[in-house]
Image 1 (tube, rainbow, N blue to C red):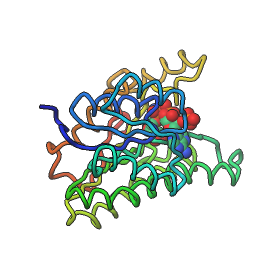
Image 2 (spheres, helix red, strand yellow):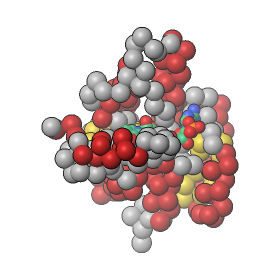
Image 3 (cartoon, protein in one colour):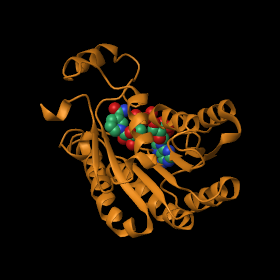
Length: 245
Ligand code: NAP
């Protein structure tokens, strides 16, 4: 029996990177998964590989109507949602002098408002199920000032919102926690030609390596499962020891 057998999960930004790894892990442990992304080709390819246990939808996390449609489809196909992984996000490390108002608002819209809309849309479905686990992907940039004002502001907001909503929905049997990854090897950071930079960054990590998506998926699975039934409003750093230096 899988560790999330029979649960219904919703994963955003699931077409590639960490999101795709979370989708694979949740399916391997017995969940049905509706996953979404704005990258349709990659999402459809992953869905074709994983078969009947998943549904992929093209979905922009900044659009409330997209969320409402996706929740309806998940419920029709698999039943009420019991796991939400708010993973979709973008990085922008511009300094204040380089950062335009439009770019600032775009990062906040996707990384912060997208997480809010996700929780607002999915919590009624979790109430129907009688239980739920929401996992919000923040960053170590949600704890430290590193990463540029827009990204840092959005990720601090995710950390704070997690705690506020955890208190609001605890009595409904819904838990809400945040994950704070350090450097993880995904397309977001592995841009062409950066191998040497990444090698140098790995040297600054106490555990001497960049994290793999699967490292974070193991934590997502723990928080999604009943093994974490007494955790809510908590923040989980997964960074190889970077921020304790
Ligand atoms: P990734 O490989 O870029 O995957 C993120 C996915 O989200 C992409 O497919 C992206 O599409 C999609 N997306 C962007 N905007 C969206 C929107 N409006 N609606 C729906 N999907 C959207 O990144 P990742 O590294 O796996 O990151 C996953 C999460 O972890 C993010 O929240 C990120 O901030 C966080 N994180 C990452 C790291 C790291 O080192 N990788 C560290 C700490 C935290 P596009 O490619 O078209 O934008």
